Length: 453
Image 1 (cartoon, rainbow, N blue to C red):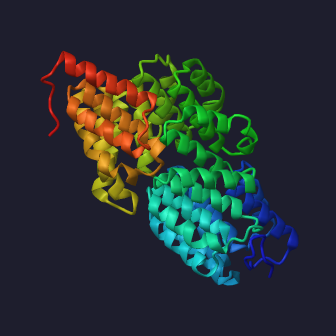
Image 2 (image 1 turned 180 degrees about the vertical axis):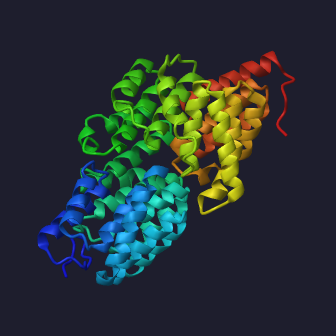
Image 3 (image 1 turned 90 degrees about the horizontal axis):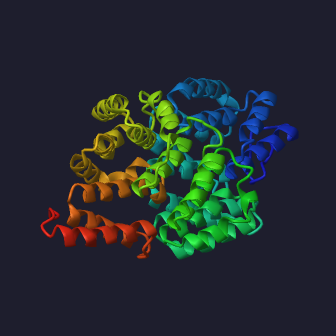
């Protein structure tokens, strides 16, 4: 039995296979595009390695795609057959994979935390726990998990930089912007390919309305995300948001066409980047041309998926943007059905905030801004449960505010806008400044606007 690069005892006995396993772990921590190739090399050389099969199943589960779940189930079945040769730590990975496929990523988190109880420097377990908590919208849990194990990572531990990147993101999502910036910069200094830590600092600048500093941070550091899988599109999305805040629309469009949608995938994360950016542009009065059509075609084909409410809501953004009312209605009906079933961790999220948010987006696409506002506002206090980050969910916040303004609910819209500003470090970004101006103009023109309830 051999120890991996992070000091964990494995059931592997071949040093060449162990080297591939170590490469896979580092690649996953760095969001590298070659992660599947390294995992495939391990499985090809050591088909009885239960942990690798369990990890494969979890990787597929994180894709949020119904059609790949059979592959994940096959990987779990193989892992079970191989389990007699697994260590106790490796067996917990199988338990986590089984929980994922049963619809309970929260239980997968528990299994990974059990690993970390005895093996705090198992960076793969820490990153998987972080990833599942992100899907569940558990920002405080992300932070608590990383902070309890980080002291075990010595300065020369090969995964320390990646753990610092996770810590930076968790700090940002829990409102500790200064500490997040420091941790993210340290993460990238320690691990130059830590795209997650780099992007955590970008989140800080988004949340604090410092677009110029954000561009300074990202410009010249492209090598930190060039190696990434489709996560690189998300980093380009962050850069586009900064240009949008500065009113540099031509550059936003260039980044959209040449980077963010360079590959016309239907991965929900890529769809979310694209739809949320186009919706921000349209709310600011920018004509995005025919760009909605491509996204709506892909989203219409995924209305029956139902793996993640975060994905469903972004599919709805595309359908609303392209005025696909029949497809949108079918997707909302499916979300309602899934919410009634209340199965697994996602069922309750389909019910709340999912159904209110979905009905709000459907109404927005139909031009019924009063109904849209009522539903989107009702979803607000639970939107974090949909998963994603504050920056990603901000498109729904903007839609809520704009629907409030369009339906004449000026006081209510202003209250949400003020709450948004408070949570974003107190600074005005371009979106907020423009809406406060609209509110002042609306009050001058219509002093009897509908008050907040």
